[in-house]
Image (cartoon, rainbow over all chains, first blue to last red):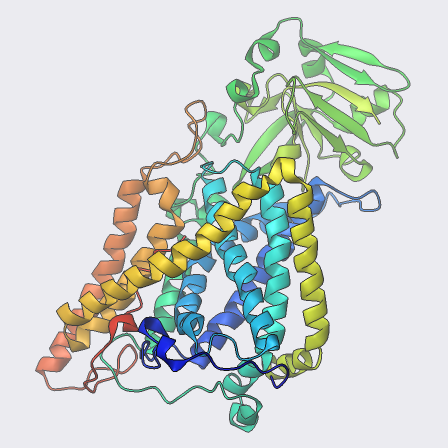
Length: 397
Length: 172
């Protein structure tokens, strides 16, 4: 970059890792970095897009109506989000290893443009490491940080993807000169060219690629069973097993944590449906109300999902009984006194879907207290945190 | 397709810079504005802490381990050991809170419900079993005078330096 060339610092400062031959490994190579970078571009792109899906499913702008079909959509997008993020661990660390000598490049800055480009590496590396570390901590429900995970993870995602775009733009010529058929013809584009691999006894470039791929594959294989049907027997290192929990289903937030135990067990419990013709039902009346059975997955924002067979009245039948019109949005309210997820909005595509139940039973028995006894919402293609548990009110918005 | 895509991207790189800076600014603005949820001083500490931990601790430690391996493990086996160490470290890092017993809550036994220490031992045991087979194959080839396959390592002598070992990438 020719503009704003800066003077060289004195050579006497060039010591330690700043020395020219400080990093002689053949793995510090532009082609290796470019190939790992391409893979990271794909995986971080997948994480960003699936993360956006999850964000906008939970906070839909007024013009956006998420479909209730396909039933498995959120299971796949969120499962991919978490699995891809975990597989990024070896990719990112190997990539940072291959380019680590660049941190100590001499002179530290050559020009204003070079300085600006190096500056955008800081949010890129910080954001990428932050996203993987907080994501892995969050799925294990390990909270050593005081910020609220989802909001912070969301904003840092924008920082990371923005810095990544700038980085891609800055490095695209280096990638073109080192990757793909006919790359020799593009060698004139840059002075950052791969050298023929020197002999050595340690890991070769190809060996590094094999090891990184093996690591990513092994991490995925031993954890994707928490959301991919049929892979559960391989689920050795995931925070959840889809068949472990009360009534064979995991729980994200227990009744104790939600402080609803006494209210949920109250024999005087009544469900209130508020619309043009409001009414209330006791638990026995609710159980007797035109009962249906559906098989739907609970799909958690933490990436796990598990199929259950749910029993109870269709939400739309309850809404019809209250005279709530088909184009109305309703709010489903929990017995929880407080908390960000005590109520959720159900828009017409989900509210009117024949698979959406206000379930009172699961897998042939009454709902477990931790699954939302006496009644919970269960709808297709909807994040688990919006499948409100311990429901006591349905209100037309 | 890749070549065409990259050429196309190269033509649009100033647009990408503009979009990237806009997204970056949007993220910083959101992080600072929604301070009750994001707790900016905490978030900044974790962001900067991650970089410092990686650049100043994880990489030097990895390099030191690599130097040790290059001194201790002989030529045709070194690459296998380094590869197995890389895989082991990555698997252990991606599941760190689980086998360390961090996280979860007493009222919800469905979070982190598995015997993760044992499971990690099973997975790493499989990794090192494969590594042992590869080492045995190489030993046999060396004895029978065949050249070691060049997939994982070259052959000639070249003193490996501290950073040539790609392994215990223990960053966070």
